[in-house]
Image (cartoon, one colour):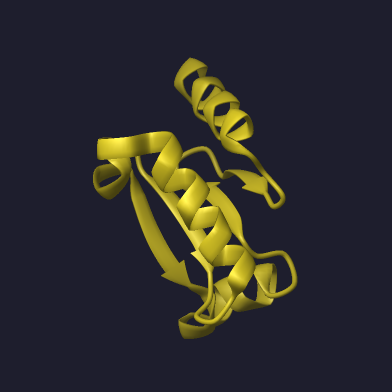
Length: 83
């Protein structure tokens, strides 16, 4: 599974989201999560500038918008595995 964490540098909510995701996924975190700085790519910035942080699954185009907790992340991943 490959997930994107959409955010940007200096975003304290993005840092909180990353910490929650890291705690939730544990050792799987580096293999599953790719951090995307939306400021570096116009198409991400146009779509997500006022919505970050967002956990995004590119294969299904499903997303989990902030605010989210560990239980929300687990439910999101479980639903992705069913699809």
